[in-house]
Amino acid sequence: MSVNFRGIPALVKLRNKGKSPVINPTETLMIREKGEDSQIEISGVTDEINSKITIKIGNRSRVKIEGIQTLNTRLIITLGDDCELLIKDGQKINGPLRINQFEASKVTIGKNGLFGPCQIWTSDFHSVIDNQTKNRINPPKDVVLGDHVWLGAEALILKGSTIGDDSVVAARSVVTKSYPSNSLIGGYPSRLLKSNISWDDKLLPYNLENW
Ligand SMILES: CC(C)(COP(=O)(O)OP(=O)(O)OC[C@H]1O[C@@H](n2cnc3c(N)ncnc32)[C@H](O)[C@@H]1OP(=O)(O)O)[C@@H](O)C(=O)NCCC(=O)NCCS
Image (tube, rainbow, N blue to C red; front, side):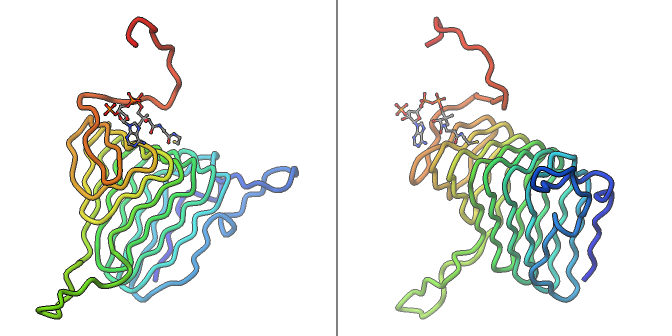
């Protein structure tokens, strides 16, 4: 198990009950369980880290976080054995973001994502069994979010989902499929609500004539 917390000591600002910020990476990164031959690498963290990153990692697994721009609530990562999680640069995490990879699988999150309180799962936690064959029929699958994807409040991204660049997932959606770039995705189960959209995390002025 190797932990690389590169660059963080000089950059991390922690809440300290009204006192001046404490620089203490060990309070920001909490590793609850660590497996053999696993690796955690975190870099590119700014001073807008106001909460904790909690990581539980199994054997032969790898977490690589290339950059978090803001973390207003917790980032909770749970990886079993033989898992890989890559979070690219520039993430804004406004709600607790839970990433659960209980079985061998890969999650990739592209650059500049925006997250309300939401979850990404690559496994179902339990088995679905075909009564005829007695075989388990619900394997884990990878999840891919492209660059600049916004997951709205309480979105649930399930195994096998792929969401293209510049897409938005509406509040309380359950996503199980793949969608191209510039999609507005929503519903339970999700469907393509609008194509050829993009988004901006700033509230831009709108033109009433376009309504
Ligand atoms: C995704 C969202 C931004 C889309 O807003 P919009 O572009 O104005 O979309 P509209 O209101 O025009 O809705 C378009 C269609 O999507 C449907 N829709 C919108 N939100 C939906 C949702 N959460 N689930 C299912 N369908 C939804 C609408 O019913 C409408 O369907 P119709 O065309 O059949 O009538 C908005 O619906 C949403 O989910 N906002 C919450 C964002 C959020 O969670 N922010 C805080 C955390 S970061």
